[in-house]
Amino acid sequence: MTTNARVAVSQILRNKDETADEEDEPKKKSREDWRKAKELEEARKAGTAPAAVDETGKDINPHIPQYISSAPWYYGTSGPTLKHQRPQEDREGQFTRLDTYYNKGVTGSVSIKFRKGACENCGAMTHKKKDCLERPRKIGAKFTNAGLAPDEFNQPNLNLSYDGKRDRWNGYNPEQHKAIIEEYQKVEEAKRELRAQKLEQDPTATEEDDREGEDEDKYVDEVDMPGTKVDSKQRITVRNLRIREDTAKYLRNLDLNSAYYDPKTRSMRDNPIPEASDFEYGGENLSRFSGDTRAHAEAQLFAWEAHAKGLDVHLLAEPTKLQLLQKQYEDKRDQFKTQVKQSVLDKYGGEEHLHAPPRELLLAQSEVFVRYNRDGSRAANAEKQLAKSKYEEDVMINNHTSVWGSFWKDGQWGFKCCHSFIKMSYCVGEAGKSMVLEVPDTSKEILQNVEKEEVTEKSEKASSSESSSNSGSESEKDKRSKTEKTSKKKKNKKKSKKKKKKDQKKDKQEDKLKKALEMEERKQKHAEYLLSVDERKRPYNSMMEVKEPTEEEMEAYMMKRRREEDPMSQFL
Image 1 (cartoon, rainbow, N blue to C red):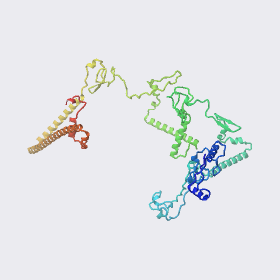
Image 2: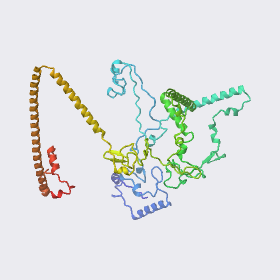
Image 3: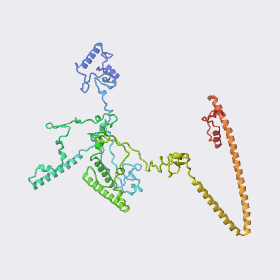
Image 4: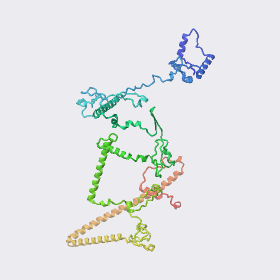
């Protein structure tokens, strides 16, 4: 490492003024001086010469390159140093100390009277009315002078470092632990007093009798656990990673399509060998949903539901109490269900149907195919069967070889075997296909009968009206004939007017259609012309129209449209 001191220009001028009598310019290094500096640097790297020392007395590594070890000229160093490479004190961030943290559980003082400059809504001095987070009062604290809110405590603005933000013990008060120690001391003193009382009552009692009631978990460390080696002399416990006799989960079945093994969590949820009858490891789901795990999950669910209903119960804090409550709840629930069931049976009956054997035993057969091994176990999982219809299927009646509805003709269902359209007919075989019996259409007969009845009713009404009119006077007949003539004339006029209007509308529509056809022909010719013209000569927006087409224009377009799928379109 070469240490060439870079001297500032001002320093050179100052030194020149001081040594004006000796020489006008500073001495330059001779070739011998350069050679000595080079030899010293090599000796320091080889370790034969002592390393350079900075201003604090620390050795400087000779293998540091020159561009790192040499300080800039404006730094003002007289000898070798690495201070310019270290963090500067003026640029370092000032972080708060570990003993300062947010104060917890601190509330401000509550004033009795309203103070000038306080919040007009709640009366606190730490904010104004526009920044108040309390509900706006109908009459503020400034006028009521009651219900004044306490002043908020302004927490200190902490500037924590990277480690300070992630320190889990930051802000912990060690004096809080004294309360726990005092509690344990009180428990120990109470135990001593109990022992002294027992000794006074029974002097023959020993300490072993006292230890019988203590918790056994206190002496678990005295028991040798599997997979551990305990040295009684050194009190060191060595835990092996795993027992050597155990087989790894991923080695139980090497098939790639077998149960998935997650290497990150080291878990295999499914059974790696589902075909085997006797297996040592059945997957983590087997242990998760077997034993007391299901009962524990049910107890936890019951604890949550009970807590939501208002009961102060916890599974870990009071397991015995929770178990008793759960048992009482289940007994009452079962008793209530049996009461409801019995009341329904007493009212409606049908208890004999509840004692019937299962459906599999009643039918004594099943279409589900199951294959078994020689030892009696299932060879594979049964295939899922499709759900059948609730109606009867494949029922042949009256000697038919096909079901009703297997034949269809002219909107009628029938049998395929004999082409018969009568459902309750007997099958006649192939002879029935040549003689098709048509079902009489009864609907037409019914309509004809209804029409005849209506005609007879009308004739009866007309005859009754004629008999009543004959009983009337002749003057009334004359009046009615006049009114009927005038009404007939009016009706004829209206009918003629309607016919004229319809004819005019038809003529107008035909004229509009003709005009639309002519326009469509012009548009097609114009479009062909535009497509033939060069794009640069085509006018602006010549291929686009924003106008909505009318009905006549749409009809003309459909009539004049060229259909490519039509084989005769080329001859048009």
